[in-house]
Image (cartoon, rainbow, N blue to C red; front, side, top):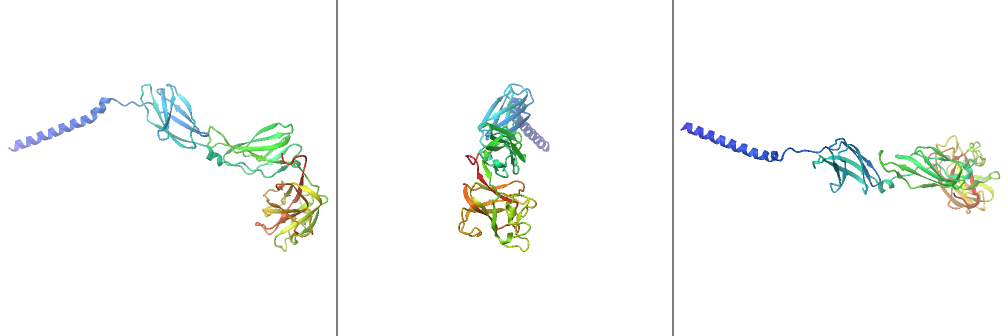
Length: 385
C-alpha cells in the first residue's frame, strides 16, 4: 500500500514536469519559427551644423550595406529620406524650414533587403530672429570732422570688442564717388580709410556656433562725417570763471590757448564747492555746429564724467553765469580717452558769441579739469556726409 502511494506521487511529478516543458517550448517556438532578427548597419556618426532657420546634417556612413536612411525629428512627426546606394563617406543633408529651436534627430538605416538599423540620435539647433535681435555692433570712440582727417584719410578708433563676432564689414564713399568695401578684423583697434569723402557705415558678422553654415550680421550703423571747420580762437577771451578755478598753475585761459597739454584745473587748496565754470567771449556772433573737448592729457582718472555747455548771442552781463540770456546747449558724457577730441553736438547749428563751460558735480573727485576746448562752424554746402 505504501509502495503504491509512492509510485502515484512520482507519476504525478513526471506529469507536471512534462506539461511545464511543453508550455516553455510554446513560448520560445514562436520566436524560433520567425528566424534570426537581422539589423541593417547604423550610421557611424553625424555632424550637426547650425544655420538660419535651417540645419545641415553631415552623415558619415562606413558600412557598404546601407541603401538609404530616414531622418526623423519633432517626435517622429517630420522626416526625410536620404539615398545612400551602398556607398560610403559623408552625405550632407540640408533641412530647410526649421524654425529657431533645438532639435533631436533619430536616424534609421535600411539595407537592400528592407532590414532596418537601430536608431542613431543627434542633437542640433537652428537660429533666427531671436538670435539676430540679441546681436550688437561695436562702438567707436569719437565723431569725426573733415578737419580731423589727414588729407583724405581718416582713422576710426574702435571701442571694445563684441563677444562672438568674427569680423566687420565696412563701406564708404571715396573722393571719386565710388563705394569702397572693406573687411576689418573683429578685434581691430583702429581702421584707416583712404581717399574718403563720406557715407561711412559698418556692421559686424557673427557665427552662432563654430561650424555654422550661415553668417549673421548686425544692422548697419553709420559713422557721420561732419563737414565743418575749427573756429579761430586767437580773439577769444575768458571773461569770467568760478572762484574755484583761480589756480595760478592751471588758469581758465589754459582751456583756450590751443595747447591740449596745458590744462585748466580748479583750485586745490582750499577746495571750493561746485559748480565750476568759465565763460568765453568769442568776439563776434558765429554759427556753431559743435564743440570739442580734450581731457587732461597727463591725468584723467578723476575728471568729471559729464559736462554741460551754455551759449548766447548777447547777454546783459557776460560775466554773470546766471544771466537770463543763457541757452542750454546740452549735457554730454566725457569718456576716459585722452588723445582724441570728444564732440558735443546739438541737433541744429546755433548762433553764439558767448559760451560757458559748466560742471555741476563730479562723482569721481572734488575738482573739474580739461585739456582744451574749441568750437566748429559748418563748412561747404552740407554739414553731414
